[in-house]
Amino acid sequence: MQAKLNKLTNQEDVLIQRYDRVSQDLAAAKQRLALVNREVARDKGTFQSMQGQVGQIASLAYEDGSMSSTAAVLTSNNPQMVLSQSAFLIHLSTSRQEQLNQVITTASQLAGAKQYARRITTAVAGLKRQLAAQKATLDKLIAKQKGILSTLTAQQQATLIGGGGGTGGTYTGPTNTEAGKAVAFAYAQLGCPYVFGAAGPCGAGFDCSGLTMAAWAAAGVSIPRDSYGQAAMHAVPSSQMQPGDILEFAGDSHVGIYVGGGMLIDAPQPGMNVEKVSLSSSWYSSNFDGAFRP
Image (cartoon, rainbow, N blue to C red; front, side):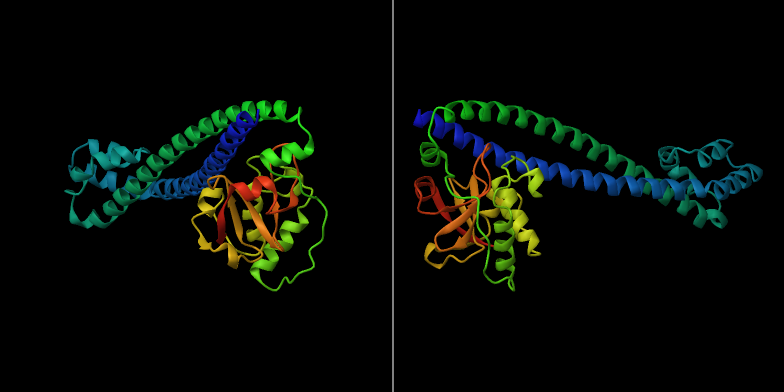
């Protein structure tokens, strides 16, 4: 049973961090898409506002005997058509060259922005599918883990998967440093539920790396969203750990925040709450990988 539970817990921790990373990628992609859509709207507005000017050029081209198709090209609402005929348009008289260059440049910007928007839209859809698949897998693992845990005592659970600490406590340390502010935030989340993929506020819950990221964000410091990214920060020897340091466990798949006195605050596992626990307790001491400082 212990081996099976350890395997499930390790798989779960790894998948949760992957889920967090994909969630972050999805959020970033959505932000990029919003920016690109605004760019498309701006370029489209500029392109359409030039239709009067374009119509004048087309009329002059017709009057001076240029190819009759010029009018259709220049007055088209399709920027790609304008671009496809740009080699022809630049041969029109130099008196209209500057206006034509503006038309072609604007058409190029609009076509490029639309193409980029399509690529990001495709990427967002792919990330959503990936996220849904990972969530389905996690839900199955969590259900299996809960089934096994229901047969164990609280002490046995703490030994096998972590947790076992307390959800009470008030921070009385300094808050005039970034680390102090991060620790104060972590204390304020004691008792909040564990929810994978969540980074607060308390009602929404936290997963382990969501808690550490939110704690340092409260101090005005941005750190990576997932535990693997947090493990890439400055490594600190165990003998030099300070409150606020990020503690990594189980192959960097789980994190907590050190609060001093050999204690850490951790969002342990689904079904548990954020708690303060001793680093010397069995699961934490046997799975400790190291400390890292933002």
